[in-house]
Length: 218
Image (cartoon, rainbow, N blue to C red; front, side, top):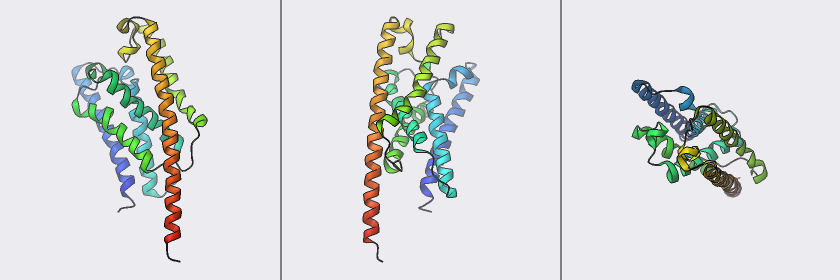
């Protein structure tokens, strides 16, 4: 059972996210305010869906003895969920109504519990091989594509998922640009940190494994 526990825990977290998103959709439909395109293009929702998929597949593979999920997919989930947590904490913690996560337990799962679970998972089960910073920068592509899509859509229909991206809310495109630069720098820092932490944890696990093997009776 102890060997199966990590896989079961990962699947449990993935199902918790799925339940939170389904409940939020049901709530918004009941209120008559659900718009699938708007809801599923929140960076928070997309990041949680990715993290849930990575956890579910990782847990399934553990339980069936298959090779683990790619470290690059796991790392992407770590980066996006960490940035989700930080941006929410600093800029959006009182905007749950606008973020369509105003059900308290749903808000807790998507903005706090799952980000912390993903970060913790990266440390206790580090990547199999060190990930260099240059390679890790590949994790930037999704947020940048999302940003371009969001800004183009905003200029067309006036809908911006977050107030700091809305020029009418913050005082013009110049202020939006400052927010974008700041969050991009945060992304780069989180990428660097995740790569360093993952590599350090991987080396520590290798040392521990070698020590365990050396102590094992022949």
